[in-house]
Length: 332
Image 1 (cartoon, rainbow, N blue to C red):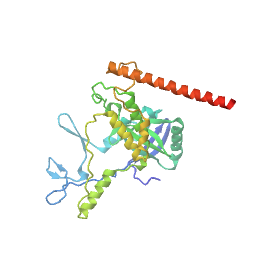
Image 2 (image 1 turned 135 degrees about the vertical axis):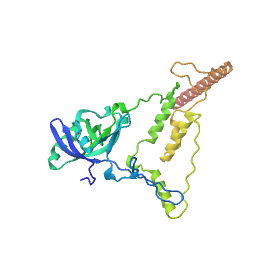
Image 3 (image 1 turned 45 degrees about the horizontal axis):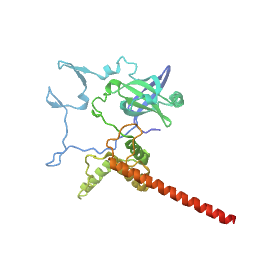
Image 4 (image 1 turned 60 degrees about the horizontal axis):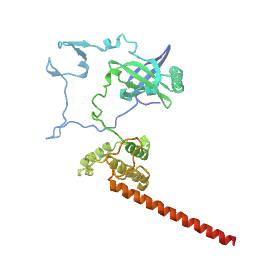
């Protein structure tokens, strides 16, 4: 049973089925917050809510909501006005469709909540919806109203609970125009092979092992200051710079990743290695090489090949003669 206070009570509308539920936060923040202070004497800086017409501070019970019109006129909106909005989703999470999970763009993902069954009568329909979602391998798309606006959401199963993920409306997600490089770049197969090797070397990780190192470092600073000690010094940052040789950077990254995992860096030699323009073989794509070797180089290479073949023939001839001699001795 969740010991978290519900932030919204309502029902899931599943066709003609209604499931009473309570909405509770599925996430919590562990970030360290700071107070604003007066640097001269350490006094707290506070914000007071003041009425502009009366020029006096007002209490929370005196504060309401208002909509500012285009001409600056303030139109008061009461909680009763909001409670009677002509929306079917005012107190209902209305399921409108079931779709495959990969249809949801991660850019639309927003806040996350758990849906808790609202009492014993809700247990059966809650379980029915949960098991139906499991068997279908789909998620439910729903509309609901929360904090003064109608929202889009996605229902999915998390262990034995139903979770609600708030979604941005499609028109709230910006198109990535002007973000990608505006120059033509060609990536070679060799570079992709090294990038794949780096991805394989880094491998997978248990997300539960990850933690907020920034928060831990900040806690050390706070503890040191509270004890009247000097805060710990930050480790020297590695100097970043322009990557002049992408292949070399990829190769070194693979080696470093292997070493960090206790593997031998020498295993990188199995990956495609960079070769000089003079010794690189011709590409199978049919493209011409950028630089042709000199005529003298070709002749020298041909002479070496001929000498190698002649040497190989002599070696084979010697082996054959030795075999025949040994066979005659045996026969004799």
